[in-house]
Length: 486
Ligand code: ADP
Image (cartoon, rainbow, N blue to C red; front, side, top):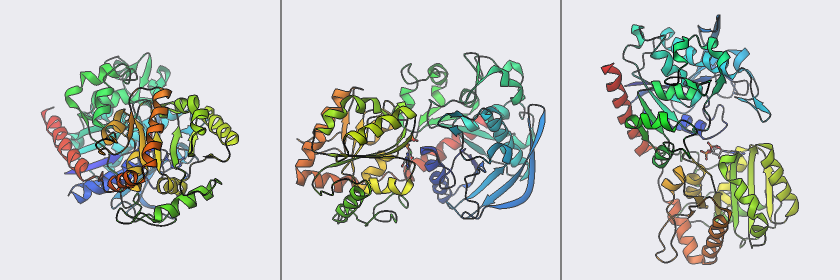
C-alpha cells in the first residue's frame, strides 16, 4: 500500500503544535509496519535546510491559483523520521518567518497559500509518478485536496483509485475565507453551497475536506463523539454527524525515542521507573532555570502550552490567589494570545517565589518541565487528544486534567481508596472543581509512598504508535474500498 502523508507542519522541520509531532512520528511507524509512505509539506523560511540536508530534486511543478500559473521547486530529504519528506519550495508563499501568521493575525493570503499547496501536492504526484492508494490529509491546510480529487481531477486516470482520509486535529481551526476568494480556488460556484464548501457565506477548507474525503478521523474516540454535538462541533456538528458512519477516533501515539526520561538528551539527568532518584536532579535544575527556591519537597506543577482559549487558563485566572496560598510551585512555558501573556506575566510578578513564567516557545525547556515537574496541569475546555499529558505520564509528572476529549481517554482518575488510576481528573468546566483537583493532588503528594508508586506506574504505561498505526492501516483499507466503489 502506498500512502502520501500531507501536512502543513512536520517535526522537527517546522512546528506550531501537536500536528507536527504526529506528522513527524506516525509516518515512520507506518513504514515500519510495511507501508510505502512519503511526507510532503511546504518549505518554510524557518526550516533549517542545511541541518536537515534538504536538497533540490531538480524538478519543478506548476499549479493554477486564480488565473495564475505558479511554479514551485520540489526539494527533499531522507535524513529524518525514517521516511522521505518532500518540500514544496515556493518562496513568495512560504519563505516567511511564521507558518500561518503572527500573534497579531493570520497572513492575509492564507487562502491562496494553501490552495496552492493543495494543488501543488496533486501536481507533485503526477510529476513524480507517485501514485498513492491513499492521500492522508491533515487539518484545513490540505482539506482542498479531497475537493479537487472529486472535482477538477475526477476524470484524471492518474488518480482513478486514489482514496482520501482526513484527520481533524483540532476542529476550531477550519480555514475560513470570504466568498470573494472563490476565484482563487478555480472551483465552480456550484461548490459554494451549504452541501460542499460554503459555511455561513464563507469558504471553509476543513468542511470541504470532511465532505469529500472517503474516511474522516479525529485524534481520540471521545473527541470524535464530542464534535458531533453543538457544544464542541464549532458549527460543523451537522456535517460531522451526517458522516458519522465514516468518522473514527484514533488516539495519537507518541515517539518515545524523543519523549522519554531514559533517552532524553535535553534533561539534566536520565531516569527510569526502576530508579527515579535522578528526577530530583531534574526538579532542581528546573527550579534553578525558573529562579525559584530549590526545595526538593515542594510540589512543582508544570504547564507547557499554546496560550489559547481552548486550554482553560481562564479557570486558573479565577483561582490563582487561592492556588498561590498553597504549598506549591507553578512553572509555566507558553506563547500565544496576548491576554494570556499578560495574565501569566502578572502572576509571575505577583508571586516571584512561587510562580515561574516563561513566555516563549522553547523545546529544551519543554523537556525539562516534563522531567522536573511532579504534576502537569491541563484544565482544557476541550482537547482533541493532547500530547503533553501523555508525555507527562512517561516522565512521571502526574497529570491533572479536565475530563474532555483525549484527556478523558488517556487519563484514569486516581482513587486514594483503591490506589488505582493514573492522574487527577475533574469533569465540570469550573474553577472550583479545578481547585478541588489541585487539593487532591497535594494530598496525594503528601502520601510519599502512594505518590512514588503512582509516578513509577505512570512511567511504565505505553502510548506508542503501535496500536494506532495498525488502526490507520485498517482505515486506509476501508478508504481504498470506498474509492473503488466510486
Ligand atoms: P496543541 O496541539 O493543541 O498545541 P498538544 O498537547 O497536542 O497541544 O501538543 C502540543 C505540543 O507542542 C507538545 O509537543 C508541546 O510540548 C509543544 N509546545 C506547546 N507550547 C510550547 C512551548 N511554548 N514551547 C515548547 N513546546 C511547546
